[in-house]
Length: 457
Image (cartoon, rainbow, N blue to C red; front, side, top):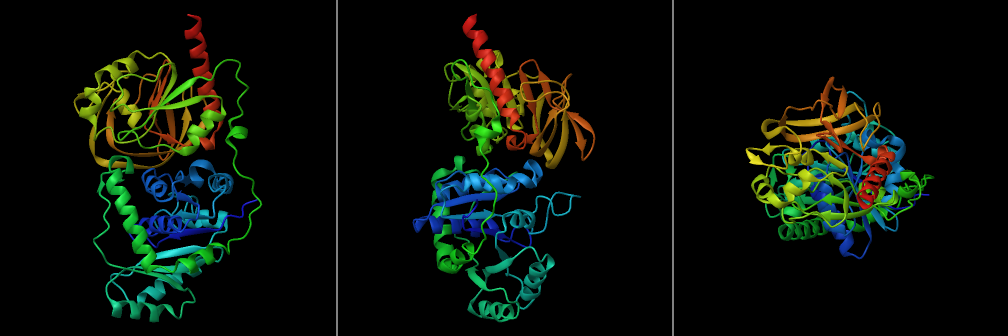
């Protein structure tokens, strides 16, 4: 049963201030002594890092496209276990979902699946009375979505605030916060959005503290908490990685799987490590920027997403680790940043050279959901396995696929992509393993076989 009080923080469009309000609320409630569970609608990796900093708990994603609508409430319950309050930051505009798929994966869709009240963050900087029409439209569009409060953001003056509140009186939607225009709180951005917490931790701590102060001063925290407590009980059971992994009991020692981390590799879903452990693996981290060797006894590698293009010179300078990865014979799962790191070079800087391909920065951003089919058997998937994934990068690889591609993309257009090369599976596609939990068990089993073969040699 799901009884956790919860709020969804949404907006009419991107850029309205969702992250400011959501992160500030998380930090403000945590400062009150509440255990706050942070969540993010969609596939975004960066915002959950700020959420984790604000709450001290893992930031988790709720993506109905990647994981399926049926898993949203169970994944939420798993992440929110033991919490006094859950705050869910939306994505894009409230009703914006996967292209061509109606409401699927929209903030509204997730709010309905969680039966959570929605607080709409409105950029009021260039309007007064019109704000009432905007809020009325969003509140009445879908009767199953309960827009239960508004936070007015970027308000210019006392007089501006008065005009906005007067207009809102006729909507029946209460104003639960007013935030003035300010340039005090800044989070630097670059080609894929905010700069991750891992790259600016000291500054990020200060920024989150400033957001907490701003939200505490401008929002009615008591009213927001009371609203969250109105969310009804849901009958769903929590997602359980031990049950989902479905792994057979291991006979030997757990295989050690090394997961890339540090500033260059910050993109990961918390459930991946949980599934690997549930499948019987020992999960350890390593930093390709600083560690000159893999952890002792490594039987498999997971190299996820991040910003290798920003750190290409430093990654290239760590030649001992590059050479060890090039010679590594165990299973390797690499996606996006990991794909580029395994290439021969990135922006002219030597990388690991596992794949005969070259990466470089591109002019255009590649972004969107994908449907794909595994082309060949690998440590991650059996040939013919269908997956849903997400691409998010401003780089390109030449060639984009090896002699044996990782995936045959079905939607939005047909093409092959990635590499299956011996023990390596590398691709631009980000896949959430909770959608196919057998992935973790398959990969862990392959790592265990490699470890056993190495011990017997």
